[in-house]
Length: 508
Image 1: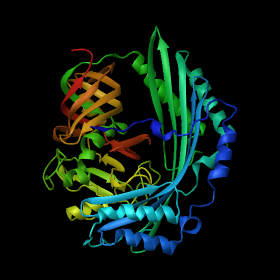
Image 2 (image 1 turned 30 degrees about the horizontal axis):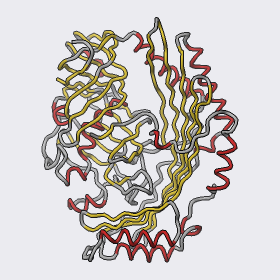
Image 3 (image 1 turned 30 degrees about the vertical axis):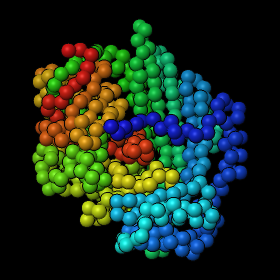
Image 4 (image 1 turned 180 degrees about the horizontal axis):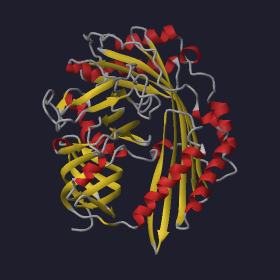
């Protein structure tokens, strides 16, 4: 089963930690000055001769169907403030290249953290193992684009390091001042700056500069020996300045506290098969997991998806239209171009309940006889691309959200989720609720704790009985895992009424 969207940044991204207050700034600054220039990343000026690199790439892909040289420089910073003090601070800087040669269903891939001619020549020898005696026909390159969906600016430069620490302290103090029951506050501030350049065998060069920033707040409250937590935050491909403005972080703190206090009075969740109303926005993670992964091209080409072979058939209730859209400006899951150089697109996957499209990278698209959709993504230069989601969401319907809840005779109103898992082969999913309420006779009652939603994507799509008019996208908190690779993604949906989901809980 594939991990679902995870709210925290993956632990594996915290590669260099400096604990305590005193040593934080100096190691970060000296590391940057010594190992990573602030000048723009131009690998064919500073690391490789462009003509030599192109000649070696053509050698690697001679007789292949496709291939590219992917070069990357990435810098990231994560600051964590916990229990009234700086807990961790990390700065990570890396660069390298990945060389790929594709022949049929086979891909040869080699990567190096050293960008020079010697390393590239060694990579050529490895990548060519996939080509064999050749005989392939090189695919044409991706269409060029001058579109830009986000700024080139480095978000880490929006504030000095001491200023960032002061802001974290201020957030901590504000959260504790809001309610005497607050016993612990955790704040995470993260930013990154990724620069890529892709060289194609026909000589095309594609570049993209991708910023990312995020602020996350977690609050734990205690009353009568019971502790509960709440979390809020968000971000996107923007600078830090908007996130560290009190106009942004104060509502985030208030929301985290509200969720924690709701859970403080929550009752054990019921168990059984019942109707469920999902709230708008972040609950779209259920859509992402239960449906999205099953509509990625590789699973369908191999026949392992629950949706394989169903193109043009009804797979969802009428009115259900699902898109994957990488073109929304500044969104966490957006990409100007994917990691093969194909411009991102607004792709319709399900239209009025009918399956009309899959998400494709170049290799799977070619093997399935369709066009790439701009969904070829990779975690870094050390990983080969594969079909991945960007921002996946369902379009709004015409129902008022309150009318969907009013239609519940006995069910659950699920507003927030912590994550979940899905089995691609059968679409079965499990999701844990972080905020949910019992509903009887159309009236929202007490909050419930420990609720999980269990079902399968194909059945859940068919059981959608109402679609709200309140489409929302998530606040920018999603990381998606597939085959060991993590990429940032977005989700969204309107309120949904789904009949007959299995609810796992503590009370029968």
